[in-house]
Amino acid sequence: MRFEIVTIFPEFFTSIFENGILRRALAEGLVTVGVHDLRVFTHDRHRTVDDRPFGGGEGMVLKPEPLAEALASLGIEPKAERISKTSEELIPEKGTGFSPYIYAAIEPGALAPEGNFPAESAQPRTRVILLSAQGRPFTQAMARELAATERVVLICGRYEGVDERINQIYCDLELSIGDYVLSGGELAAAVVVDATMRLVPGVLGNEASGDFESFGVADAEIAAAEDGVPRSQHGAGGLLDYPHYTRPADFGGLRVPETLLNGDHAGIRRWRREQQLRKTLANRPDLLQGATLSKEDEKLLEAIRDETE
Ligand code: SAM
Image (cartoon, rainbow, N blue to C red; front, top):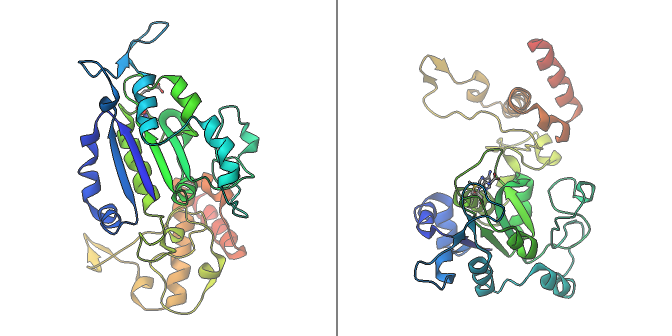
């Protein structure tokens, strides 16, 4: 999979790609990243990328022409042209339920229930994304969808943002990484790259690791498996992850929960599941609605609720 990042601060990304899982994924060629300096696509002495907003007001706006040139240099056509070709180019994958392109006019009801992409079409080869505080919230479900895309183009805004016509003409989606305003899209792009690339097959040692952590997909079989050593994470099913501990067993006067020390695999599974439920109830009760809960989970949850009332 390839990421293309369009930015006025290309140097921002150097250290980000030199560490951890991303560095390994790049070294092994599982993921590639192109960082593109927007100023290369200017034609004046000052390499101007911004201008004052029509209608007045604070700040500056990223001009459309350099962005359009940058996208053209990456072979990105306006979405109207891409979509007319897409239906012939794409081999529809049954059950993916994603549309090739996102339109501003799409109704919320047309969205796929799990992710943020409209239903009833195939996974596109390329998605063009505008990082924006006004965008749809970036979620793990969306990261999973992007990880199945061949190429993701990320446009980093600055100042007051990007001329809206770039969004209208080229972008499949506006993405926000949270309800706060950053000074630029670079941090947001780094977040999207990081969360997405670790879900690309082969990047995490175990193919399915991404399914077994916070926000992971439901996997009833693994969650219910009673034999063998418990996995480091198992069957998150849309809940938050459970707490993790390592040596020493005593630290700062706190001892690691006894269940984790006694080798009772079924007991460890039960403890972890209970902790997932506790954490999710305490920190993100909204996730419980979409989570895959067994009868036993429901009972546990009721007991935890009773405790806290
Ligand atoms: N005027 C914009 C608004 O109120 O929504 C804020 C512009 S912000 C100062 C500059 C750039 O940072 C944006 O164009 C966008 O690329 C990026 N940005 C800011 N907050 C973001 C967020 N929560 N998620 C993604 N990108 C964000």
